[in-house]
Amino acid sequence: MNSQLDSFLEYLRNNKASSENTVTNYAVDLAQFADFVENQGIALSEITTPLIRAFLRSLAGFGYANSSIARKLSTVKAFELYLLEKGLIAADPAASVRSPRLPERLPRALSRDGIERLIEEAWKIKPSLRNGTILEVMYGCGVRVAELVSLRWEDVDLDERWLKVRGKGDKERLVPFGRYAKEALIKWEAVCPREPGFLFPGKAGAGITVRTVHRLVVQAARNAGLENVTPHSVRHSFATHMLEGGASLNVLQELLGHESLLTTQRYLKITPGHLRDSYMAAHPRSGEEE
Image (cartoon, rainbow, N blue to C red):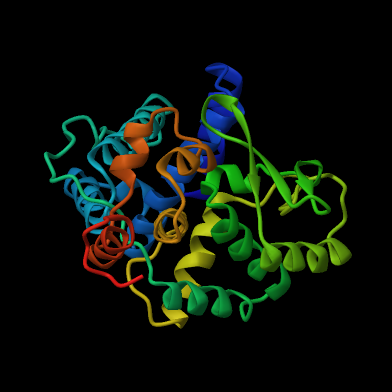
């Protein structure tokens, strides 16, 4: 299935004049779909309408919002239509699939202990230095997986601890990172050549693939005894832990690269414990002793 995926992405670049960011987002969605199909032991020519619907249900189980599920379905539809036009399949199994009306769900945030276990396991998976650094950067900066794989060494300022991130619509933002991410990046810099320039290089001069990152996170989570963890879970955990640590929604909006504050508000879930602690600390008649 990989060759068809690669051909489709090249088609988007060359025939649809899609931006590299758009192509990367398509690659993220199709990597998830390909993993789901392969886990079912099904070949490309055997993909059915019920299988695609099962994929959508699995996304809901991971906590993806309706808008994200609709986008991923749109990606699958575009891919299947491409295969049909190329004569690689006899019928389009996605044509009759509609975006299901699912209740809006937030992705599940890991506890701080869960994140520590996840990162610890990533450092044990070979190539361990690369994989550990990936998780340190993902959690340390809260970047999307599509943003992570496009990072280049020129985007990293180790002295000032800044990361220049290219987000949706090719908009750039600066995200700070902490001591753990810096230490990991320094170690990674010692063994990773700065040419051809990608922070996490893959094959043939390109960056690491989104599929590789997705598999890394899933494997590390499995080894840590954690369920239903994706790269998106790591990003949501970053946001949730920042909020619990006292960061404002406006700051989180900037860090996450959201255009609208409403997106950030929907993205986050304030835990009851944090809500109570904030009230007790802020309200003058909370009853707490000074």
